[in-house]
Length: 212
Ligand SMILES: [Zn+2]
Image 1: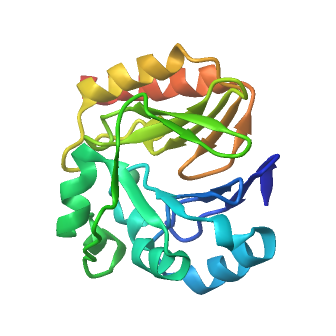
Image 2: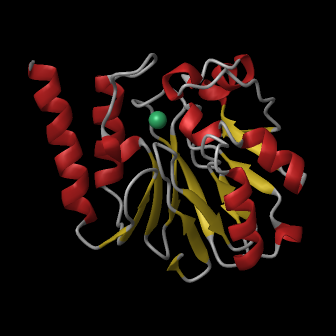
């Protein structure tokens, strides 16, 4: 399903995350891998896989990274993740058990850094380090097109190992300062408009949890 010109989403089902394909160049998150054959078929029908060579993991959780090996083997693509989530991915500490799966170890090819730029034919994504959900969570932001691919940061959830309310509050504050018209989250439907409100709700959610 096309959610923006040159961005497709494969909506997550049964706990899997949304997988985004940008410009026939980037795969953003890979799901648990359970639905890989269906995803492969879908991607082949919408995309030129010859140029699909970069896999970005927004964070290490298994519902976003479990499919990494299958995608990499299929596409001969490189896996990119933030340094602070690298060890969990490489040691298989990705909460696989919570998804009823055995841990899978994935090696990382490249590390993402805050403010680094990922350029494709039509997009210029800035990596924004947004810790809180995990220490190495990132969002991708295209300033000119006002697009944010947010992983699980907008969920506001910090109740996992390595989660931090304090970091999440700072990260959401950072996002609230951006001009965002299109939000492509790790779970749930894409949103156009009203994104500032969604971020505010997430911030309010953290404060409520903190008060308990
Ligand atoms: Zn997550």
